Image (cartoon, rainbow, N blue to C red; front, side, top):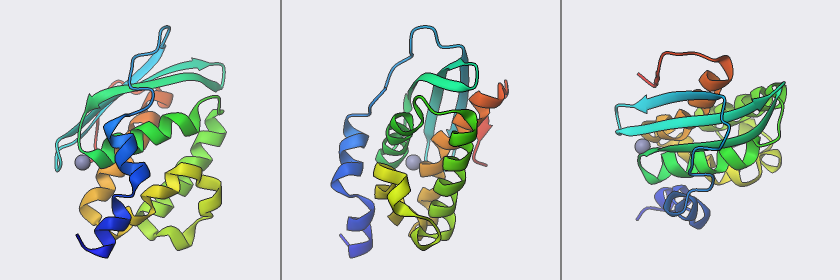
Length: 150
Ligand code: ZN
């Protein structure tokens, strides 16, 4: 395995991919959105319990590669109990990290999600890592059409 690939599949990423956190439909979820990444075959449904402006609970279900599952798993942990504005700010940071590189963001503020900072060197995996975030945004917007990365 090349050094770059080792960086991509860090232990924390593999662990979240194997044992995704919040892999469930929360009781009382009042928002949901579906997302697909046809390039890789990743499919995800994100469920939210949105109370006012705050994500009180979040879960997801779906099938996909280790990167897509790890990203969704880490995302659910990062956005629980956050407001829409906080989630939007986090989304911008994650998106910049994935598309422009880790030098463009403050990795310290991203916590565990920074484990995905190697993804930007693998353009084919960027969509895997960003799928959950786009789907979350769609759930917050209340959109009824499925998200596709294509
Ligand atoms: Zn994937």
